[in-house]
Image (cartoon, rainbow, N blue to C red; front, side, top):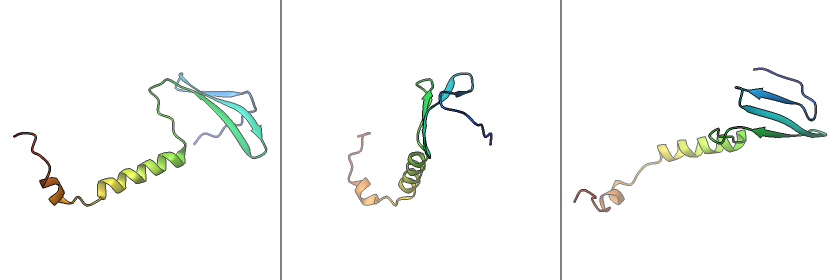
Length: 76
């Protein structure tokens, strides 16, 4: 892990196309701005973790096959 010290108004560049800007610092709260290409997905870690947990739960959920059997067969 790389740890950098930055002041308000300073930024870092990642991979030549992502800029992380320290927008403001107020006590223990730091506001950052992220300038990245549109195809780069940016999520807060807690949101990312919640999505991953939800995906794992969906994959491991038991499927009621009787419900699936009642669905129309698209090949008919």
